[in-house]
Length: 158
Image (tube, rainbow, N blue to C red):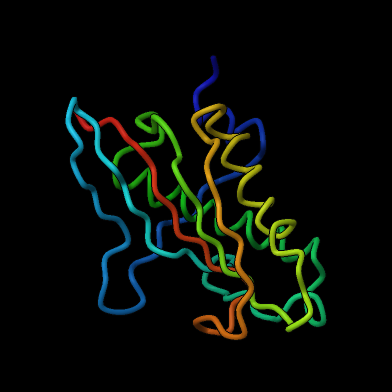
């Protein structure tokens, strides 16, 4: 079985530096659940490429395909936060993603957008990347980004 790091290399993906919090919160929080395991909560990661915030509403300003790519970039930031907190090799299971897509009132394809992040996590983490998910549309997001995704994982800590 290949490691998450080998899968990232195969996919040609370099994880970004995990960004610091943008306000008064922490990026990750680990809650012990016993047996050397913990729940790892990852704060909402926004669609950005490096330091550039990727903004625009779907689908009138940003296509579904481009929004899905932006969700994938949120996924790389989630992985970067996990790597910083505990290391990708310690992910036992991604539990849940909660994604918000900046959307027009009549847009209903948020799940297609969220597939960008969901597919990345499975590609990198294998079966451990499978998760439950919520894909929500909203009329406003911080910095007017297209996508924001928060996550929960079970990780090994001992």
